Length: 222
Image (tube, rainbow, N blue to C red):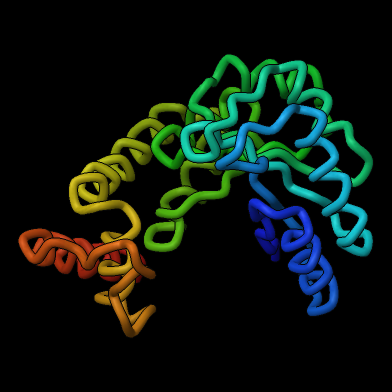
């Protein structure tokens, strides 16, 4: 169980890391500091401070330039993943060449693929697994992709990835997170199909498709 503790403020991230250790999480994770333009050394100091506050829990570093605004070079990633206390990297950049370079440079690093739509490709590039959002509604499909890749059945992995991506196509149209909450609502997982503001509710025109998707996934899971 991994607690994400990343905040703009290092002190707030430290407080959350201490709480995660206190209540029994297995690891902590944090995005790179965002909003303000920080130097790379400031990024490293931020992670060191969180690790020091996490009472021995391993750190999962997040590389997600599209949302953090921070594009890490391979050399910078190499530095971050070798900081004492770092146990894993979530690579959400879409750069599969960089994924393979990271795996080649760090064969023992726990490496997670980020973008759900390239999960199969990420595994082939060296990822051990993934951390994603659509796993919440069709996790068994991703488990089957991982099994197919392990067994060398790339055709099955590709077919299953395409099935996942059809769902992702709809979610992108509806708004990924509001769409996911709506599907989870119709799967009887969450009672309220809303994200926190400023996210707006899903447009009503997408509700029939999302409800049908929920019914399809529940039937498939059985």
